[in-house]
Length: 345
Image (tube, one colour):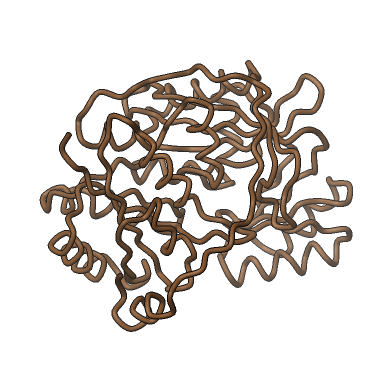
């Protein structure tokens, strides 16, 4: 079986874990793929770099803010050093840069399988009104505002508490108009406008992870209900569920937008209504859960990137429990020092 070298980012595993460790673990467990995983990190403190049961090589890469030329030069170096057939970026901030470099990377023999620039823009919270309508889900009452005066006016239509959200990143719960304006000002300084005000829906938090083939076809999906989360809202314990509305919405999302690559829909179910809260245009941190219940989406992404047939599966059993745990890893200090000084191990 020929070897495939896959670069994976997002290897931090803290109370705000990245998806990279789950992706690497999934690739290693694909019996029909002989994968060697290259960990790609922005900091030597990303703990997944040192999990050598799933990561075979590790390299520091430049931050996306360094631009495409710096990243391309580093990936060329890595390919020459250990090989690199596919790169799977797993962080939102990376995706536009990798999408821009897709053709150039392909010419270097490095494949990707990512959302297009237009698909990536669908994740903007200001686009959720249209997306929710298109895929048959509800949306909490939402106001898109472009100034602090608009924030103050829009708040008259909401009950407190209310969520104040940046168009792409961060969300705060506000219990008064003064607090909401303060959060809006902070978001405007960091991310600019528009800003969203959104009513808070009570109910069960349900998520679905899926993979689109770029032509309207689904290469697998799994639904999950959050049971316990970290203070940052990241799943720590969850259970697989079969929710027909959510699964149909994920299928409709893929068909309507010809979605290419991985994504996650975050929803809240209140009675018989399913509300769309967020779209993540990449694997979530719990992606290994899907692999463990029989739907290995990272493996399918790599197969598709290389032009190989995917092992498409929609079957998974409800009632399988996911429990994230902490493991201590002891390594020689020289390994960490090499990562800090040379940027690779």
